Image (cartoon, rainbow, N blue to C red; front, side, top):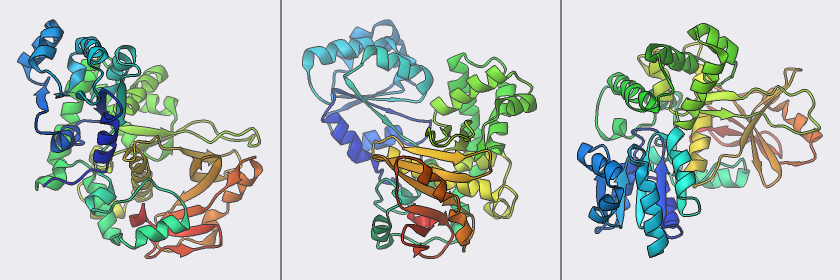
Amino acid sequence: MYIKRKLEEVVLQTAAAFPVVLVTGPRQVGKTTMLRRIAEKNRKYISLDNPMARDLAINDPGLFIQRYAPPVLIDEVQYAPELLTHIKIHVDNSHKKGDFWLTGSQMFHLMNNVSESLAGRVGIINMLGLSNSEILNNDFNEYTTSFDDLMEKVKDAVPQSLTDIFQRIYKGSMPALYSTPQSVEMFYSSYVNTYLQRDIRDLNQVGDMSSFLRFLTCCAARTSQMVNYSEIAKDVDISSPTAKKWLSLLVSSGIVTLIEPYFNNALKRIIKAPNMYFLDTGLCAYLTRWTNPEALEVSAMAGAFFETFVVSEIVKSYYNAGKRAPLFYYRDTDQKEIDLILENNGVLCPIEIKKSGNPKRAAIRHFKVLDKTALAVGEGNVICLCPDLTPIDKMNSLVPVWLV
């Protein structure tokens, strides 16, 4: 069963504006499936996972372009960076929009090659796993804290219980888990092996794969926490520079995201380390050895997983609109903290995330620190497990998590 992706519209808009469209993202998030679904009938398809096609693309890229003349969809283009120069030559001669659709999983090297070879000719689209709204067939746009926007969502949203949410958290966001009944644990076991053996090893950035797996697991156990490279390095028995390099691999390959602290000259006492979140809660649950959603929901990590789920859903909502997620957080040396800050057009909108059905008014007590900045402060949200969208005061609301 195919679940319609919100990014389909973005791909078609990008193809109308650029000769080359590149869809990047982690493995198994549905890049190829989506593109083949919306491709016109005369668009050829070739995967560089095919050894013969890859060999031709590497050793005779000019002949490859003749053999697979556009319009064409080339899958896993990172395996043949030699193609990119020849694609550039072709589009410079033809000037046709949307001739080449490309996918790539190894963003760490791929983006360097693309920026060098196809600058100004390629529209780059970042793709993650399924969002909760896609799974529930809700046509939600990027998340905003506006009460009016949230009220519009209420009309079409499907309410979810605590059990529903943690089942979603445990299962994660990989499309294969929603199209075919299968073991979640077996799927992620295979996924980790594929990620380690095909992507990370191919990047030649990691020598000891067993240490990297421990590092990956260590990061999963710290989801929704502030990054401390020295602590991670100590737990995994690697150096701090290695921990920093390996974390950059996880970020560039779409496994985790780092939310940077909001900086303003008026806020003098902020803590400057980023917060780390896994972008697929199912992978995070597998790595931290949870075997069912019920155990996860009552565990000491339940709050961290709930926060990770909310952050990942907000990030996806912006990716699915073809936009960068304008997310920050706030924490200072006086223990004042705001989980997320949405910055749009010079307006700061604070967000607190609580695994609670009835958060107290104290949940918004730190929002007022933003008044010290020179920017306007917009509406604030407490995203939680409450049953309905409920105003706290004229500027802040309790928001049920199924509206994200």
